[in-house]
Structure formats: C-alpha cells, structure tokens
Image 1 (cartoon, rainbow, N blue to C red):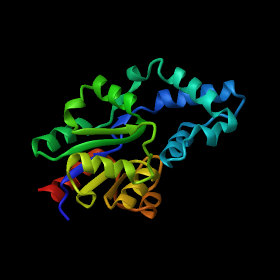
Image 2: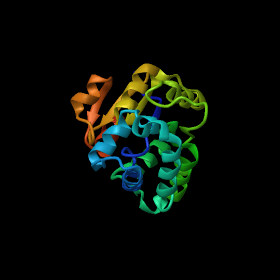
Image 3: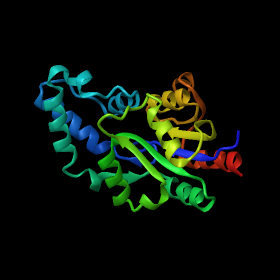
Image 4: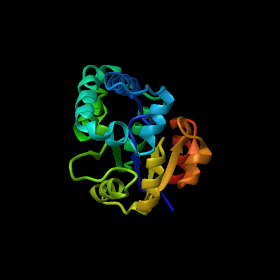
Length: 213
C-alpha cells in the first residue's frame, strides 16, 4: 500500500539525545544508591517502552523523576546531535508534500524544545509527545492521534523508530513499522512487528522513495 504519511520517533531515530539521558539517569542512580547502567542498557530500557521511574526506583519514583529531570535539563539542548541523513529526509518529504509527524515518548515540551533548537519545527505537521492523560508507546494511541491530526488513516502511514515500543505501537495501530537497528537487532524488531529494518536513515530514505513515488 502506498505510503501517505511518515511518523518518526525522536531520540535514537533522528537525533542522538542519549548522552544527557544516560548522564542524568546514572547520576540519579548514584544518588539513590542503585547500580549504574551502560549506555546500551539505557537505550534498550527506554526503547522497550518500559522506562517508568517506578520500574527503576519503586516507591521513590516521584523523587527520582524530579531529580532526573533536574539533571537532564541542565544542558540537554546543547548536547543533542542530528543523526546522519535526518534533515535530507525531512527536506525530501516536505518537497513531496508528505504529511510528517513526530511521535515520541519524550515530554511534549522537551520534544518541541529540541526541534526548535535544531531549527526543525517547520518540517513537521504535528508533534505527539508525552503529556498527562495521553497514552505512551507501545500503546497505539500516540500513532492513532498523529494520524488523526494528519488526516491520514494509520494503515497508510509508516512509523520509523529504533525501539521495541515503536514497532509494537505501529503494529497495534495498523501502521507499518520501519526499524532502525542500534540498541535492538533486526530480528528483535521484526519479532515485534517491524515490516522492514535498516541501519541508517539514508537506507530508510531510499526505501521511501519507492514506497511514495
């Protein structure tokens, strides 16, 4: 089926925003006398959609979450870096009039701030981030909401992401998941519903040229 809309995860998919996440999480772990995580463990944990502070800190989740955000927000906008091929892909989608959305588990305000810092806001028709009362991936809700705001049925969209939660959310919504292999292997992403897997946004871009044109 021809692709009529493109949805993209943010961290690990179009930007490398993990350094401030890893630093803030591990500093919070130290302050709460808990074991550290390696960078790969942090990526896999967040990519599973099981990154609630309760899972990590139990009954101290609210205190830990506040401390994590305090540390994270010190310099995160200075640390984010675009991934190769991201802006070229956005420009191509915009030139072809393809509705495009961000669907992320990052908070709405931080997602919008990252896009603004990168001067990317104009590339996206809508941004669906974490908000009170809004379900998070792997729930299909964020993808369905993005498609509704784009005026596109989910089955005519693709969801590009690097995590298990991205692929599960896409499958449950009726979208097609395109997986980027980094923290997870192609086999892991395919097992949870990815239609195809790639090693870079440049490869995804090449696939989309066939699916859209």
